[in-house]
Image (cartoon, rainbow, N blue to C red; front, top):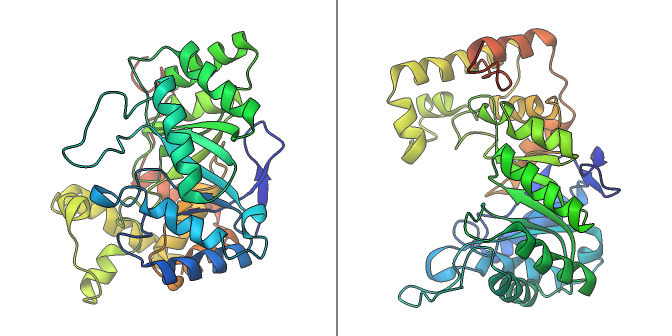
Length: 329
């Protein structure tokens, strides 16, 4: 496993991030524990979760599964850089109440203590805002986070799904307060979805944030979906099915799989390897449901893509270009 610094910090993290969103809803606890053990054995040290994972009536279940894994000992907690998130409403159906979501100081305090209990730990290494809060001033948000850092409950703070201007505003406010500010941004980014290149990634680079792409395979579309469909190994649904119903999108996915065939690489592994070549990227989040999917992701770290392949990706999925050139002369 290769390692890099998380943004401008001294924290060393793996070039792949283990996503846990499937733990609970799709992967049961024993299998989730086995995947986490395998990931740690392979050198992955950054594990990403969120307080709402588990979804529906089971919100918080994923953090509990990570917590029971930590409880097995063997240095699991100390070897892991633990990242979780705050923003979503954790109240059950029919129990919604004001101040049970978003980024008010009240909810941040409530949410962090609840996550610590579920995770069975005394600290969160990277506490991430799951979304921007348009109604809470940054002075209030940073006041709450500064207290958590002083208490040792949180070590670093990151963002997720932020526009570039919010990254700038957050870190300018933090600098004025003498706080470290955001050190990472978790955003939707892959060859087929490159809008982050316009402003989000440049802002992250300018302010020293590590970029952690989520949905690197674009909901499975970049993981060899057409090949699996032809072999009867996968039936598409949801976002993937809607995308493949568009003839132009289907043609692009086919062109990408043809490019992978030409260079004798697996589409999913090549997609992760492509992200590892992108400026500012710390490491993509891989969310395996099985051990086999984890093994496939691990092979991407050692995969070196020739320039001809990288040029081919740009031809199939041209990026938007930086701002303002993307939309102005």
